[in-house]
Image (cartoon, rainbow, N blue to C red; front, side):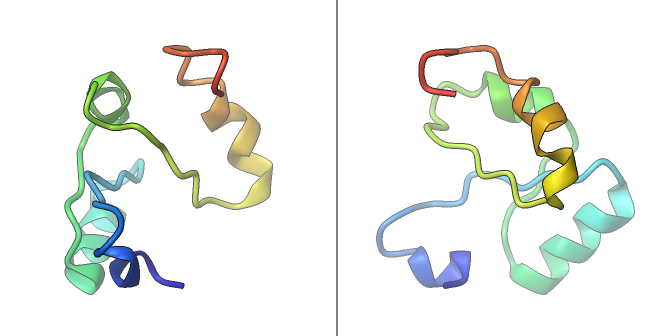
Length: 73
């Protein structure tokens, strides 16, 4: 199920990619908000869940980024 199809049960607060070109392409293709800085997303107290939608070999590195609440990570 696409994220846009979940709009009645959740809100996408931001999407991030390390390159501006990819962020811009994602925003244009999906009409979802993007953020230039991953730290801004992780520091936002209104965001309750972060989805890592990347190739599996990158998950550990990205999972180690957010240490706000190690009990729920």
